Image 1: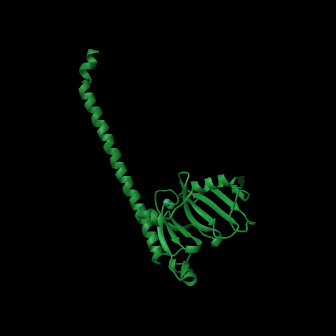
Image 2: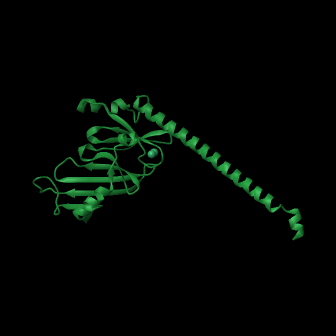
Image 3: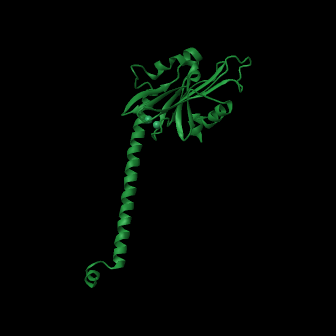
Length: 217
Ligand SMILES: [Ca+2]
Ligand SMILES: [Ca+2]
């Protein structure tokens, strides 16, 4: 025991060595975090540049420029599309959302440096939007503007564009003369019959996101 004490470090020295090691570990952690943030930042900047090039007609998607894809906006509605950025697939990087007004968003992602269309609206019966709820972000397709129905489908994507969850929340009331639902209407959640109260609870648990106003916050 005496030998051990003489060759080994004093308790104070051991303590100081331990403290130094902890300090070094902390420094390594901070350095790693800074490098990771810088790398992530570079990826973000590169993705943003691709979105910008697309918006400026410097980059085509499937042989069409931004102006060509959205020329119908001027022709049909007399207005230009508006653009937003929002993290739709929860990968920590924003996707590009182009609002087409009556059909909702065209959502573009950059995957491995390539611009891709993640999702878009399909006419006025499947308007594309973004919802938040249940701790996640969802791409929505909805029909709230036609009579006899309120249809909402929420799709959750991962960063590779795979669908990881789909939710449908529908109310149908085709016979309603004043075009509103009541307790006797048909309500379904993922195809299963639910009550009006359950329908409203589900609808209240998912909130429509206006990416523009969220950004402003
Ligand atoms: Ca994202
Ligand atoms: Ca993404």
